[in-house]
Length: 470
Ligand code: SF4
Ligand code: SF4
Image 1 (cartoon, rainbow, N blue to C red):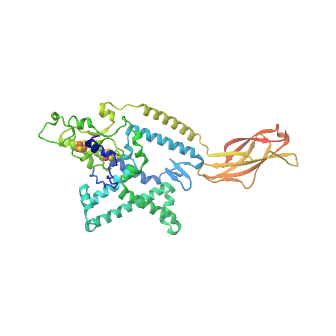
Image 2: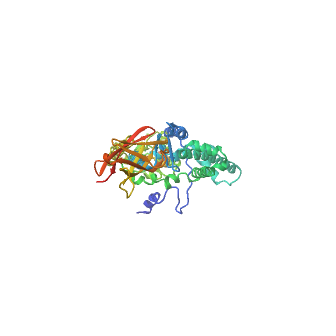
Image 3: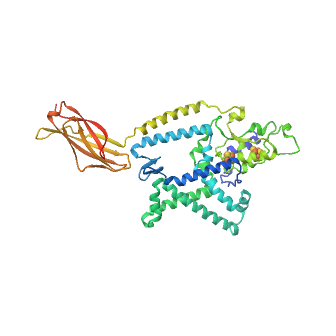
């Protein structure tokens, strides 16, 4: 490879925000504006409202979404899932992964730029506050070089204070999605000594968010986020991504500065006027003209910037646009690739299975098991007894009072110990004894049905095998 080619390909050696010595290159993105940015703002207002209202929305008695890893209780759309139903959670997660893969195959990384909370908070909240305090990118660059006193000190302190205050609010809401808003309110209103762990969690989360939005920023998307790292595997040449139309932009003679005295159409020069605006606005510091890169979060800021320049020089918009490699190279329209069809089929099957499992989900999980090593015992009065272990799992959010009844056979059932109360989302382990007269037993094994009632409602009928003499 020639030296020139090596230089051109240098962007592939390292991410845009790291120099050859491995040091961070700070990105000062130009304030974006344009039709896509306006749409993103509207969507982000909606999503921010959803994030901040979400913890207070209840379906029945349960929140819309709560992932309480401490109590091992997970609520999704008001439906409670307990650890015993981990298979449902696992299946739901697999479906989510397939949806993400399918979405990425078709629409690239659009989720990152338009929906991901990291981008929404960073670009639509923290970045805009930064523009308001520090000014646009050139002023920010100037400020960065200034000594840490006077104006810079005042601006920095103001920014840090506002950033930490917002991080604190986000941390509280984040915690609400884990333990519920009632508990978070308790933590912040009660005596601090009663909630030391909760308060430590809030401060820790606030500090992490503060660090992420003040300093770590786009590194979350380019270095940490596994979804971003998977782009190379997920995208194909039919995926719609934010792309530079190199066919139009470069033509035979490549990109060149705009010269209003020449008729560009006859020069063989590409439509890219090499203004660099697409690079200046990029929050991840890349040049989209180098092709699809893992740093690109599809925020579309470069589309707005380029469209603005194209308007200015009287050329058609869309030099950078949402398009696939096939569309740009061959001028072909989007088509469903075999990969997309295969993922769609897998996703449909998984969604159907998931729907059936949710639809047929029982409130109570029951298990009867003969006490290990036992068969039957003969009582003095000719009665035969069998001992069983019982196991109940209450999947609802209400305590269950369990009653057991033998159906069809004249036998008596005794619960060993107190009555069976299964707390919400919890287990009950115990033993029962069944006593039957030898005359009602037909064979060595007599099938018996046990009716299981929870709070007076028949939940299920469980068949056991009662052992007696041959
Ligand atoms: S290349 Fe364009 S779409 Fe991608 S992150 Fe940069 S500005 Fe956003
Ligand atoms: S904004 Fe458009 S015209 Fe300007 S450098 Fe980028 S691609 Fe070329």
